[in-house]
Image 1: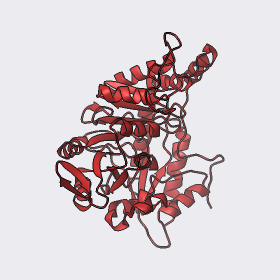
Image 2 (image 1 turned 180 degrees about the vertical axis):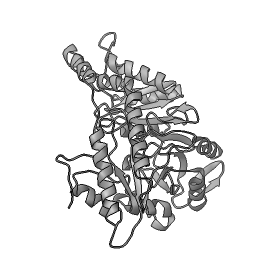
Image 3 (image 1 turned 45 degrees about the vertical axis):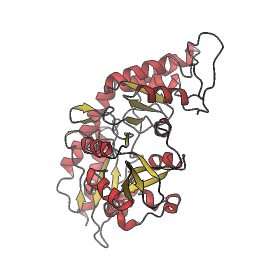
Amino acid sequence: MITARKTFLPFALPSISEKAIEEVAAVLRSGWITSGPKVKEFEEEFAKYTGAEFALAMNSATAGLHLALESIGLCSEDAVLVPAVTFTATAETVCYFGAEPILADVDPIFNLMTEATLKETIERECVFSKGNLVHKKTGKTVRAVMPVHLAGAVCDMDSINSLAKEYHLYVIEDSAHAFPAVHKGERIGTHGDFTVFSFYATKGITTGEGGMVTTRHAHFAERIKLMRLHGINRETYGRPGWYYEVVSPGFKYNMSDIAAALGLVQLAEAEDLWRRRIQIAEIYRSEFADLPFLHLPLPAIDGEHSWHLFRVEVDTVPGKINRDILCSELQKRNIGSSLHFIPLYEHPFYQRFGFERKNYPNSDAMYKRTLSLPLFAGMTDGDIEDVVTAVKDIFDTL
């Protein structure tokens, strides 16, 4: 007989403190609720926390990826290297410019872009000609590489940066899952030319919707700052007088003070939220260590994992267990789960680029086996026990 929870446990929920609610309410009462002093303060505090030279708040990580690419002058004659395993935003922002996404396979353990998977992709898809890396199929110039720090595990940025330098590529880190991970003694946010963070509802810290771009390049920071609000050359808050100029056709990507107020409190609480996620991950790793047919995520190499997700891999035992059976059985017990991610080449839109599944064996294996279990800082001890009991019960009946 299946024992189900009385209420459904999602695989992720935001953790919002009373302090955060009070700060948001204070902004609402202040009369200034759009981009203003709270956004500026959030940018300053985030830059301090990550060690970044510049931090620019956005209304989403997707907006941040878009403007990072815009600032380097990406155009329809260009191409960008992207991992096959990521959320669509990474590649779709490349497509905004009419540029070509070139998919690289991921490693079989962490499902990350690596030096080896990049070299394999470059050898298969590209040629180095007259100082530029060129996509063989389209003749487009490869301008950037976008490593994705999946689930909270961080790519080996030294080797990726070295390869990018060899081929004259910009490095744009998609760190939507990575905050506040540490890589080789440094907080994520300073390794690439750009690092883009997400503050979506289920991320390590949240602003409801929102994101941040960090960079060490002053000229790119100025361009992003300009383009995030209609290409207007003077900010709204604190503007001396009524006059301003539109100097470029920009976008509406600015963060509000409402969101920034929430973000400031979340940033102050980030270490506590992180420690709780680490604790939950350690419990899972201990409790599930001896289960057959279940492979657990490993801690970070050369750093500290953010534990945004707890992704397990399930062996296929015909008639007994596989990833989909585990998902279904958890659902029967009122416990949610999710998949991160369906490889990009599986989606109808990306099939127009002619990607061949055979070129992505590790991505394909991941897709058939992986499931994300509930992991968020607000989980109670009872929630954790329910997940542990449910998973053990499912595997004990095999």
